Length: 50
Ligand SMILES: Nc1ncnc2c1ncn2[C@@H]1O[C@H](COP(=O)(O)OP(=O)(O)OP(=O)(O)O)[C@@H](O)[C@H]1O
Ligand SMILES: [Mg+2]
Image (tube, rainbow, N blue to C red):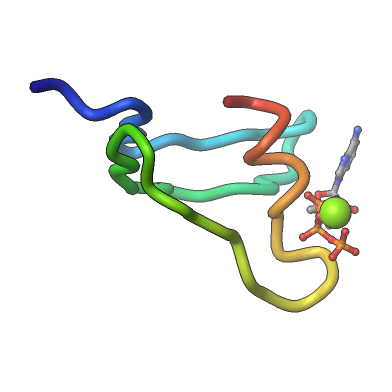
């Protein structure tokens, strides 16, 4: 079965600024998943992209 969410080399940029670089992850259906990292590392940006 396909993953519920799959990111393969995702970048998010604001102009020249790279907020997320080469994000790769797989989340299966029913899986609990969280983003953990320091302020400004791109958690919210990545969630909004998804
Ligand atoms: N609309 C935007 N325009 C330009 N830069 C942005 C924009 N949104 C976010 N950024 C920048 O992208 C980077 C990631 O921001 P983001 O808000 O995703 O971080 P975060 O991990 O959610 O931080 P926090 O833990 O403080 O919520 C930061 O350097 C932020 O300043
Ligand atoms: Mg945030």
